[in-house]
Length: 103
Image (cartoon, rainbow, N blue to C red):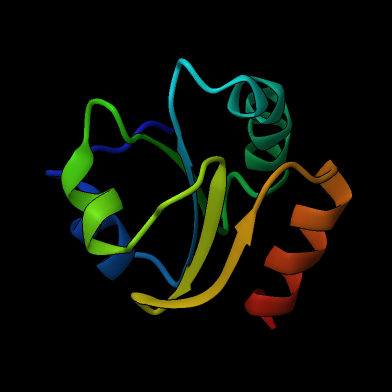
């Protein structure tokens, strides 16, 4: 799901576990990671919000959370950042991370 600066805090506060992909259209590694994040989202459709935030169009959230490199994945639990991952990794890596925070 796509989120933006207006829906960012509400998304964090209304869901137990949220994975946010901070990305930009001009970022090559972000375009590589995009389909992986889409696949991860399908795995957790009923239990976790897997979201994408375009930092070019939504600079407030990326500034507030000090996102300086992209792609950056931040996992939030109960509205608080619990893990930050920079770069591209495989689908199973993200699935394992989410499962860890669901338990």
